[in-house]
Length: 374
Image (cartoon, rainbow, N blue to C red; front, side, top):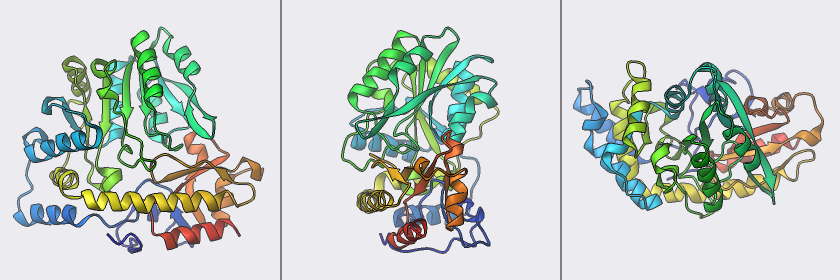
């Protein structure tokens, strides 16, 4: 659990590092961490490879992985789920695109928050739907959904799907009970299916409980809850996630939307998920402590830099930075001129912002701050 280590990823074709390969720009953009996986995960992968046979494995037959998810949901969210509710998907991006196909028609609108994760913002268009944005607003020093706007969009006759991101990416807020109640009220009132991307739900840093959409009494029968071990345990490259769908009819429509197109998750991904959710609790808690300290350090230092400001996120390892006071034409160029490579705010729908990944060694983060301060 040496989170201060800085592994060399230059020979691994890591997407984060390939972007600025051959330059002196420090990458801090895509949402994977610089932390070596927990040893039980690596041991599970070694054991599976050493067996020597990597043939077809139907996810529903992998009882170990499914029982691990059930254990994790009970432990983390006090949520008793049934194995029948699980649908394995090779990532949350294919999953919310499956939901787009299953619960909306061509030409209809799909509600999304803005700013948001670029593939989520892009889902309506690539499915020949219209993107209907709901702003994220700053209230009392915290980002939240504009619920008046959400209700206006949900009331439209050509809308039947809302893709939510909770915890929010890039803003980092976690929906409170009251906020999820409002989402439930609006979706129920206007008969809108909720697809809730909760991939960062185990990275809550302020101690509040995560509230899964599918656990809510008013959303249970009309929601798809998307989760994964990928962000929490840094195994995104194994392409394994899952949807939890209590309603059998909703589940069948979702599965049908991916039939013949979306592949099974990998044998390695199932093994890693099982290990992550059953053997890595201590590593997980230690990582939360490290991320919490990194977040507090970064928020404090960013707010010292003239022209930059930020609010402290409730969750994730991502900081959403407001650079509008710089009054520059291109905030991403401003960062890259200082040899720092964050996620461009324009990709999220806010060109005056950028997003920093602080899931890294403190020394690496200190160098990022030093460069941005120059």
